[in-house]
Image 1: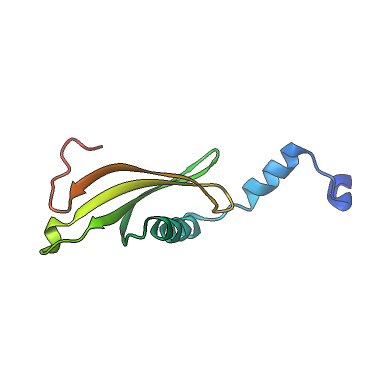
Image 2: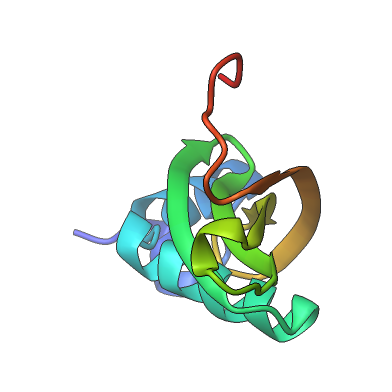
Length: 110
């Protein structure tokens, strides 16, 4: 049976937060939206996704972008971007974490 707050539409902030958490989007949806938004903002092609993480405020996605295309492609300059989205897949922030050559070894990077 529905509670009074469910029947009347009145809910406390805690109940609203629980409802949002129960209707969260999955990592696949978040990742696709992060890729779309970072490509739109930067105008750069997305190379790959290197991390997806759920946190208390939403989602953190690490994306590799091609910043400078070269010939041969092994000498392309890539960058890792951190994209932060809320539970509604709205962009909260993004920042570049590092730049590197595609053929560079990842020693020392964690």
